[in-house]
Structures are given as structure tokens and as C-alpha cells.
Image 1 (cartoon, helix red, strand yellow):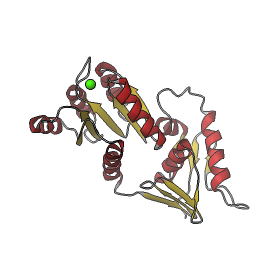
Image 2: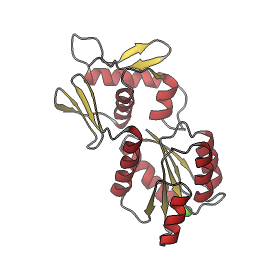
Image 3: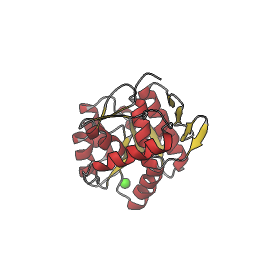
Image 4: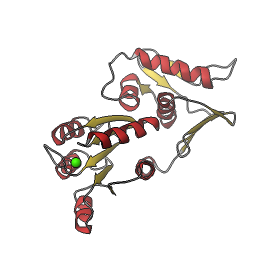
Amino acid sequence: MRILLVEDEAAIANFIAEGLQEEGFAIDVAHNGREGLRLAVDNQEEYDLILLDWMLPGASGIEICRAIRKVNPHLPVIFLTAKDTVDDVVFGLETGANDYLRKPFAFEELLARIRVLLRSQTGEQHIFNYANIELDLDIHQVKKDGVPVSLTQKEFALLELLLRNKGKVCRRTRIIEKVWDINFDHDTSVIDVYINFLRKKLDSPGKPSFIQTLRGVGYRVNDDA
Ligand code: CA
């Protein structure tokens, strides 16, 4: 899952970005309103959620939220702001934001709200299975044959994408969009490296890999188990 964070205070932006990366999200950070507006509108199809500071140089969070709503009515938006009067909250939600978090907030609360919004987008599902493999988003754990398997954040995010799209092809460009971020250097061979990591950790000996390779196109986990 890929998130755009628009926040001009570097310390807050780093704190949020690092925390979310540890949870397996791909994060793009915009440090001013203009950059945030451009990324939000140009890349809206690549983002699963947007975190928006309210007061920003260049363009305000409100302006950005309105611009997002014009091009994408369903993209989840959470305001992060020090503004906290009831009027501000109502105004923020009326511009089309889905939720509102007052600074300072605990990272765990932000994470919980992100998960709630993403889940409402994806139909409440938080456990994804394939045969003997299970991925639980709520506790951020993967099991094989009921035994926890340790995955890196990128491995986890890649597996989540494949299992969410079980039966469908995950194209290489889509994998890059959803698992890596804007700083990705476009050497897509890194995808194959991570697919191999997942196969080593999760395939069953003597059986075909649970991840199918579609040469030049992408990867797929079949919908037959
Ligand atoms: Ca600010």
C-alpha cells in the first residue's frame, strides 16, 4: 500500500514516514503544499491514502483536499493538524476528508485510523490466505503451516499485494507503484530479487512455487487454494 504524506515540518514528516515504512507501507513525502498538490493530483491512482497537514506553504491542506476530490472522490484522506476547534474539524470534513487527527498524536493512533480507512476501502478483510500461507494485517504477521515466518517490510508488502490480488496478474509497474516509493531507481530487477526471497521463505519443498512468473508481465498467486 502506498501513502502520500504532505507535511512541512521535517521532524514530524520523518517520524511518520519512518513509522509507516516499518509497517510495510511505501511512502512519498511532500514538504510543501505545491509539491503535495502536484503529487496528489498527478499520482492519485497510485496512492491508497493521503495524509495531509492543514497549514502548509504553497497550498493549504484544504486546497489540496478539494483538488483531490475533484479527480478522485474515493481516495481516503486524513488531516493531520494542530487546528482543533469544532468548526475546524467540521470544515475539514466538509471539504471531503475522511478523518481528522489532532497534533500531537500517538503513532499507534494514526496507524489504527489508517488501517480502518484502508479496510473500509477493501471490504474489512485483514487476513489473506493462500494454501498453507496466512498474512494477518492487524498483527502484521505471516505464518506458514501455522508457524510465524519473519519477513522484511518490503517482503511483507509484496506478499500483501500478491495475496490481495489473488487470481489476478500483478504487473511489474503496479508492484513498483504499490510496494516501492517515488525514490525508486527504476531498476525493476529488484522485484525478482524480492520474489525469490518470498519463495525461499514460503514455498513448500517439492512443489511448484506459490508465486507464478508471467514472463515480462509480472507475477500471480493463483486463486485455487
Ligand atoms: Ca504545517
